[in-house]
Length: 322
Image (cartoon, rainbow, N blue to C red):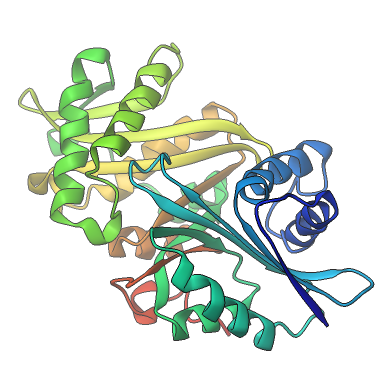
């Protein structure tokens, strides 16, 4: 087995092989085999290969494994991160290679990690955990119709004393402050959630969305006070097709009142009306994890980071990996 490290010159052959490895194990993505899906994966990996370090295991006939990473000083999360991509041939015993490569490369990665791991790579997962890189959150995929059927009739929000209306420009400051306060109080659920850079990114995205007359950004009001923000952003994902990202942020006085189910039901109905065939999102919140299991959402990815707050039991039934 030959091993190489490329930096900073990009090798097109290695890049294409990395794309093949990633798509070959993307069993959860309906459009992984499409030209558009391949182009999307290639674009993500190309940025890392072009500017970063690329570690390769090559048996002389083909590339069997790749670990690539790059420093990203201005990411969407508003703080410097090292974006990391790890993939290997499913028939390749990667245990020795990944251990040696992580021992060499992790000390070079000085910033927070942005590492989304495919759960099929069990040996990579175990090697990361052994080196202090744990699960920050899980990526869950579901079908809106299945979720709605599982939730059943949970009643509406009006009968709980809440007014629901479309997010407007006049609500942006309050909605963003709600997000800032939530993640400042519980940074373990999104270490970047109260970062000014992330909030600026979120403001820009929301301002763009509310320009569309059919947007699904909602605020929850009680006695005129904005106490919640719920969203179902539907996009034509190149790997998944029409997919909704669901999000809920509630002020402390609304939590523990059984609102998650009716809010999710309303968002799922909106998502279906806007053509969503799937829902996809990332979470570590216990209530969302439990409700995700009820709704039949399945784990398709692991967001890994150093010094992760939660152990495997926190993410039951999505961990541990068998």
